[in-house]
Length: 78
Image (cartoon, rainbow, N blue to C red; front, top):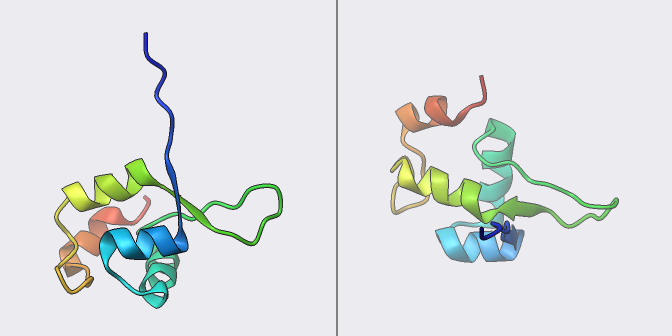
């Protein structure tokens, strides 16, 4: 049985993967679209690659990095 390991992305890696700005990352965090994690009191934010991939699969991100308005509601935690 193969154990699944989570890949973590920092803010720079996330902006490169999604071709968005840091400002967009922080805005999406505020909207609840992506969740950032900090470890051991670190100031560095990390994001689960699998969570980012799930957002991409929902096709709610336009090529410009903007979110489809319907998609925002679907991504917010309930």
